[in-house]
Length: 242
Picture 1 (tube, rainbow, N blue to C red):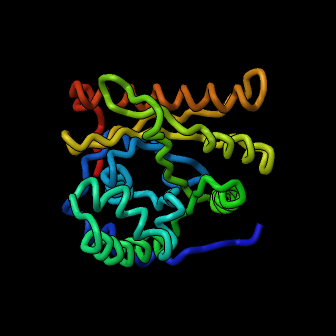
Picture 2: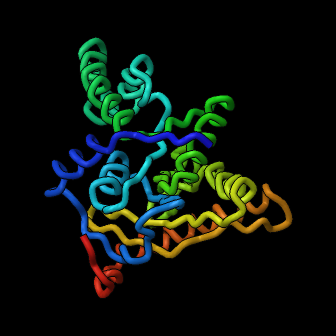
């Protein structure tokens, strides 16, 4: 595969500017210093992506909604997803704010080398190809697999996952012959902490589809367990790193 690099200057600048806002990281020693690997986290709106990037020392390449990498589509997506429901702005004023925010957000998201992911099949294939290329270069992907249209855990509020990302593990094995580790981390806004878990590996089961679903469920329950531990304060005795 051809090498595909992204300049890290903006990524490092964002981490430097965001240093005062970082969360405490518990169990960082469980995560790899470099890839190939995938880290998954709960979303918490914008908190999960922002804090994972600011708080973890690894260089991460996040999967993002395709609309947020496209200057033409981003304003409408931001309006429907955030500006109107969260800020309560509507009509021309809301769209004006969406255009302003989108101009900044799209530049940052693209500037740090994010991987755009759309539901459109052709664009999804493109995202998987780019992801495999990054993994081949020894990079770490950051993925937020929660699906807001799926039921959420009744106590923790974490939605069940879209499982398609697990297919990367199978594709990686077929392409490169090794197993790809997936590490769950739980981001807790109330405690301002992140708890890292141990690696989960894809298991084929009775077939690829069943293997993807079973591995996805293992990751979901592992992330929920991590979040519950933070809820209960059980992570306090672990090794804390920043």
